[in-house]
Length: 261
Image (cartoon, rainbow, N blue to C red; front, side, top):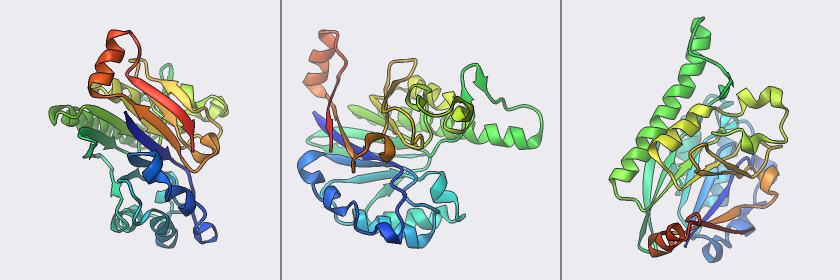
């Protein structure tokens, strides 16, 4: 089993310095890797990013992150990403990374994602330049996620995880006002995940949403926004190797999950 810890929407600033560090320091006993699903700061300032960096520096497990819309607010996402990278995190935007965990290759493809809505209630890349640019941002983000997940399959990763900030499915938005669903995610992300294949999809952004969901193709989706999981992080267990094969033979999903931390 590979233990995946994850959290998003921690929205840190100077007045929350040190708040999560004690919990994060326990990750070595509870997880094999740590995913940060965006909105790590309140307004995307370098000062706030340095607070996040202090929380994650020197953790006992690899840290992989994507940024969220709040991390773009100050128009310095590259600087925010550089600060987190200097603290040891791998920050992805249309990229991927491979971790060796207990002899298993775990590939993580990450993009922030964007808005657009879901089947039957989505925007189209048509009409005014502003609308086309809006929807094009989502399409290009989804295209990059698909490409990176496919590349991970080519690198013989036994497990693949899609990490985004915006949601790929409606399921994990339940609890949010339906009127704002189009601003919380896009079906194009789910199409990318299903098209390329993945073992788990992790996102944040929907503070009033639901933790558990699934793509149309059967990939398990988890909303790890901190207001949803109500912990410093959630831990999910992914089966691999002979465990995954045995699970598939018995008709069970190659996935197990235990409580939250």
